[in-house]
Image (cartoon, rainbow, N blue to C red):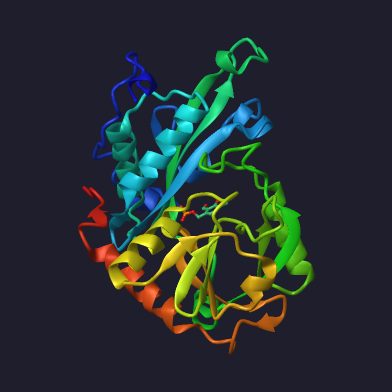
Length: 319
Ligand code: PLP
């Protein structure tokens, strides 16, 4: 990982009393070009390749009740993406973690959505060679957001299965968390056109893949499965595997056909933005009896309990 650390790196800006006024950061706090800023002032050049070519990687971790959930796993995935994209940032893992802690602490949020990201940046000479670009690291903490709202968490989401195909792994390694979302956004419009609330799209084999910002699971005869290929290896997805291991539930990554998903006993989606969220309607047809399933409910409960467990979460360093 040492190739990611710039020896010329400026020391981390430290928190000063001047910074610590939550009222000056009502929406959240960003870290950009070495400074902590209110979100409204966090802006980048339109010439940044992150914007022009979607040449960027990112990760999102959440804070719940003042605690980061599985921050180490998010840092692993972020640094893995940087390495695969050959990007360098002037901070190591501890440096990035410190910036994330500072963004949350400065925002004062106890429940936050915390993003770290790196764009290819811009080349000082406008060169078309990505190696000439100066990579740009940013981070921010904003209020916690969820794919499903309170009502949808209670009664389950209504989902449509779009025929749009998620960008295949042969094009983009889905383990590099990225902003290539045109397939997902087009899927969302398909869903809205059909009166659904969100979408699932297909993988390159025509099986179910994932949705805008989430993975999907189904439960059949007490066994869980989630699509194996062509999806982001979500940290919440991984957490479901870990929770199943503890709870003695069988879970596997496998192909899930559209027909199989429709016939499942239970369906739920997983995301850092909301955790484990039930799905009770697919393309206007109820999943089983149309109620949130027992295994889904059980996993939702344990998932949130783990947010207080120091093996799974750690306190934000508020001043
Ligand atoms: N799939 C996609 C395309 C995503 O963007 C995300 C999260 O943003 C997920 C799945 C869920 O991943 P995680 O559980 O790590 O939030």
